[in-house]
Length: 314
Image (cartoon, rainbow, N blue to C red):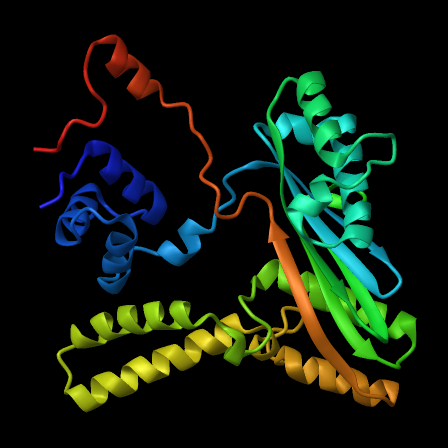
């Protein structure tokens, strides 16, 4: 059996909101594996891990830029939120977003691209680290493009124009007037920022994610004590709801809370007299998937007293 430490129990509590004894049991039941323990707690109805795990955990800014039928979004991280208010940092993120329009979303290629004031993006970033006195990194970038139509940007929690905590791009293919598409795209982008869809359509959802949800749903259904045929129907019903809730086109539009996004798009096409297709979208939330370093004063006190923080739990 794997050794269960106080540190691992603490991490599981922070990620799931479950009680200490439940977290300890979850880790014990799953040989100390963190992700398996999270799934175990979810299956037991003891955690809302899917919501907890996606919390923003790093600082910096997300930047967007659009030119014609092409749009780009980038994320540049920093150690503290204070840096996001720095004009040097803001200018850097703004320029990198513009450069992504020209150079694409490959981070290595973008890092080697020529910066407007001279040098490369990577070299300027290194200089900024020295000037600001805090580590920074170009984490990721994405570019969307359509042949005919618009790519519409939206920034939520905007710090300054084009820069903020959540950046969204929505690509609409259509021969409809640009102003019509931009207005529609802005509403869809605001929906994406709020609802956080995981894919455009249900069929696009990650297969591994679906299997993970299936396993969790199966464990929950089995605990109901119902016959196997009923359990299977419960599982399939749960998966159908998961697909509907997490695919953009089937989500209920946040503007009215009752119309599927696909129907909103179809109605817009009818009103414009020409089809409108939601081709793609991208959503960057600052720091998602990155664990933020926390100052652990308890650990400092324990260290000063000569006590190890991660001693095995009795």
